Image (tube, rainbow over all chains, first blue to last red; front, side, top):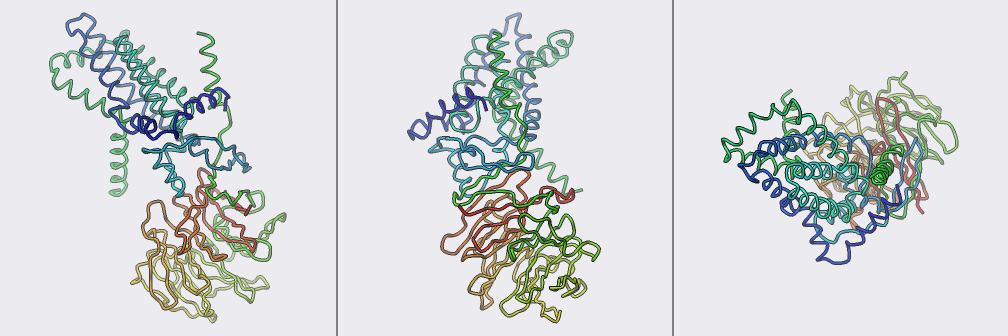
Length: 263
Length: 291
């Protein structure tokens, strides 16, 4: 683990566990979807409806639709990557640990991570003391939130510099910084997620910016003809994206479980 | 720009460059430290039931379809193998005369190994024991065996006579493991219904822990006035007493998550069997030593 990585973690983590009020604000940005993602969603809609009569309107909307598409690819990719590698969240490593490596069990280095005094992270710390660990807490690398929100913010930035700058600032300083401060992620988890999100977005935007851009014309045209339905659909898609596809994942789990019972 | 890219690359290398760990063990009780007591290089495969005896461990080696004996610093000695019909040895007990008894959840029945090393049936599968799980010796001298398919506990007399000791009306779905406390009360782990049962000396059936979140009892070991409980579903080791309730000792993940059997030595050190890959024959025996 790099010194910069740990140094940045401890600098942000030193903010928590001192004041219930500060912890409550940080917990809001972790647990509350409105605080976590609301301003980013607002930036998306700002970019979508910005100067509807502008000749760049179609291109902007295509960029935003491709950005939404990228989020649906990022979800399974980050899930696969985080499940393929055992990487406990920092708050778990504040316990005494032993690490199995090549058949050897060595005592791990204990991380001085300050615990949150409120919110979901407090519940997870309490659950750990009772021996309960959420499997999701064993795969912190890379951060799916970083991949999602960096891709979304960069996509907004490509469509509208002003809205994108606000979305990026919110993503970095509120959504992602709070995850480091609370002991959910190392900075390197966030950096890796951000690189993955940016890479997937870049590949898709590049793919659909040339000859294949025309593929989006019918959808962009439909959105212009039916702005009410298009706005409603965008709201639902953004809500699901802001929730890092949790509804979709849960639905797939239920369908898979039902299929298992039937078969 | 180049410097920023280098910084990002070094950050990613910090996360990606190191070889991946296979498991983490989170010690929640600071009175213990962990070590590997035995692994595949010691001659075990994928162990289940454990019993401390005479400075070593008697091991129901489920993955290897064998019963073995291992002493620290020595190679494993095999006591009974699949050539005798063993399939999935599950739980082991030893009586005062030196006879070993063990269950087999695939082959059924209860077998015994005499002090001379000969293996025979105490009770065969066709005596109403098609799939046997937990095993313990009652103070009265009978052997109690959990019958998975019949959802009951059977009593086997020293002459091999089998009778129902606790029938399905008690509600136990799978008597996976059993242990008597110092007062003669019997704890029963049911890892299908996720319940810890207590059958009192006067025969009343109680449920000290029932369908609690994150609790599914697998194996029991009563030692030093405390009941130790492994939970293979959640990868957790607990201790329990009526006074303190359920307390987590350690949480296991990755290759160590599937903790199975448990036993204790006279110093209070705990030994846990871990099935990393039952069919591939990979596993460990961990020692949680008291500090």
